[in-house]
Length: 359
Ligand code: DP6
Image (cartoon, rainbow, N blue to C red; front, side, top):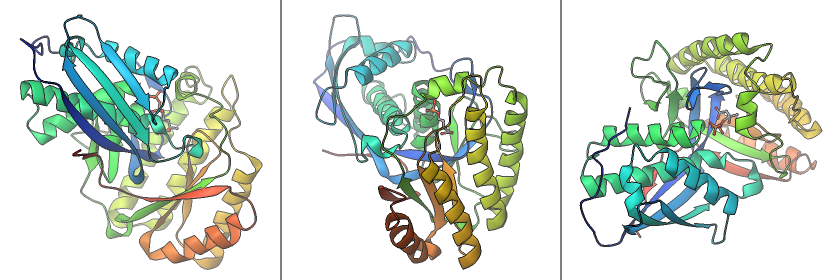
């Protein structure tokens, strides 16, 4: 779709740099299962976070070697595996950005959140890199001066790096994947949901409750591949679509109980898929289940609108809105932390999306 053999440099230019800060996101409707080149089996919907961000600066200069040349500095050190991943990714997108083989690039990247937090760093890292690449293209060719063209392409490119990264190029609530009732939706890039969001959902918070800081037990690539031939494959993709319909109408009507029901159902369905795939993964820890029970009890007893979602790991994302902030923080500090159920927590909320950093 974006292949463009004309994006080739005619001559040298002065070394320059660009820096983007891009957030992670947490899915409410999960992307789990893909086909072709990074295309989702079902539409997904996420909240873009505010504090969990990757900052990536790319310094680039003209080079005549005819191949991609990169140096990577990650969190002020080396990261050979991540470097390799970036090089493979850059090579794969050469038809989109042919000028990359005419550049020498130094990529400096750092996360504001600890590696151990279990926050999806591929979403923030790949979206930050995609935004830098689109900015470089625009600086060199003035080809992406229209903001909507720019972000559309950045989302498309981010998707090729990591599916969930396509959603991180926008703030607020973001949908990725073709969903017939949203005309502009596509499997190839994400779109922001700016209309039909009731004020009840305008200020969502995400308290990331750290149960374990162990490395991920299953990579996303492996996890997605286990959906091929999964006994519940067809039912899961249908369920995700049905849940999307209910969630979109809950968001529009301000229906909090419906929102809670769908969000928790999606989290547990994701884990149910992993538990029942050919190679089985049990990613929840005893404390995860204990906390889920406590969240449900707290919600019922105190009539506070909180719910949980999960990523592909044991940590819990506690979703609530601004009005319940004090109540929820009390629950985290006086119960979960005090009773040793969590090691730590990260106080995050819905954010406005990526930002260019002037240095
Ligand atoms: C459970 O986007 O990490 O977080 O496309 O292989 O990079 P790749 O997968 P990735 O998968 C995310 C899975 C998830 C759910 C979600 O974010 O929708």
